[in-house]
Amino acid sequence: MKKNKNIIITIAHLATWICFFLLPYIFFPQSKDIPFDISKYIIILLIIINLFLLGFYYLNTLILIPRLLFKRKWLLYVVCIAACFVAFFYVPKEVAHWITGNDEETIRQEMVQQYKAAREKARLQPNDSSKQNLLTHKPPPIYKRNSDFRYFPGSYAVFILVFAVGTCLSVMQEWKKIEDHKEQIEREKINTELSFLKSQINPHFFFNTLNNIYSLAITGSAETANAVMKLSSIMRYVLTDTQNNSVSLQSEVDFIKNYIDLQLVRLTDKAKVDFTTEGEIENKQIAPLLFIPFIENAFKYGVSAKDASSIEIKLNVKATAVSFSVTNTIVKADHAMKDTTGIGINNVKRRLELLYPQKHRLEVSENNNQFIVHLDIDLV
Image 1 (cartoon, rainbow, N blue to C red):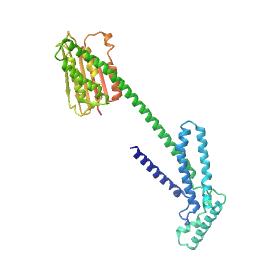
Image 2 (image 1 turned 135 degrees about the vertical axis):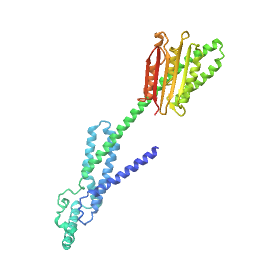
Image 3 (image 1 turned 30 degrees about the vertical axis):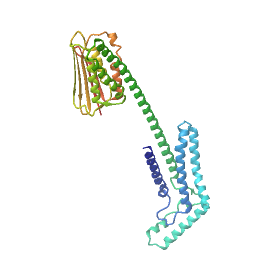
Image 4 (image 1 turned 45 degrees about the horizontal axis):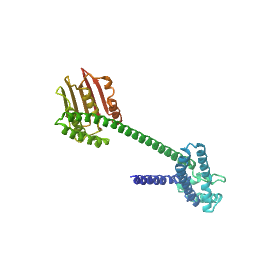
């Protein structure tokens, strides 16, 4: 994956520079009506200018910006850029002179001779309208003595363009790198917090379940063996499956059923528990252990051994959403004890904020001596 990405970047760089190298020929100050060829000196000069700009681009993006600009050595960075700009005035010209062995005045005289020869030929062919334009055009400024004969028009602007593009791209890449790093830190923070919240669930849940099985064993109940098997299934689910970010909704439903069965063992006939599911639960994924705190809370504070009480649990599954509700009778309890109940609803709210931001709706209310929890979750 990374190798393919590097190949694509390399191809993009090559394509960009090929297009860029064509710019001097597009902007070269030669009238279309002038028939003479570009001199060897000009061709070499244009090639050297392109190579200089190419080297300056990578010098700026790979060395100067990372080592100076990003480290806030702004003055030194400006000095280096200014030095490169000054070198752009002289280095390509001197290298071109060294390669060709000609000085600037000799090259200018050769071009003037070509221009005069073209004008003379135009006088001898008065019927050629394209050549007659030479008679009315003035010689380009570079043919005059002491004129600037170093670069094509706009070359300094192109230098600034190369500088601006390289700097902007580097700054944008650095900004994206910083943003990606922030997102990674945030994801790690969320995963750490979620792991901590789930670790709070496990001891609290197992403590209550073991107490129930202990009660069965003390009374010699025939349901003890069955309860141990259900606990084994619950432990396997909590300690293995819930380590993933999501589980199948079917597994979560089976887990809830096993939990309810273990709770029913200790309840009397005065307590009624109803758990119903609607819709297709197959092939649906959901974050683990989201529903159990509400169900656990209902069993803890919604049933009584003396008075009639009830718990109604509903799970309605739609194509892209899940609707969950728990309604239980409010039983009078010690409020001091109620304030120290494990992770409580606040823990679930925090997990929902982390796992389903802007994709859930949780309502907790009391009505006619009933405690009602309603939770809607969008699965897409």
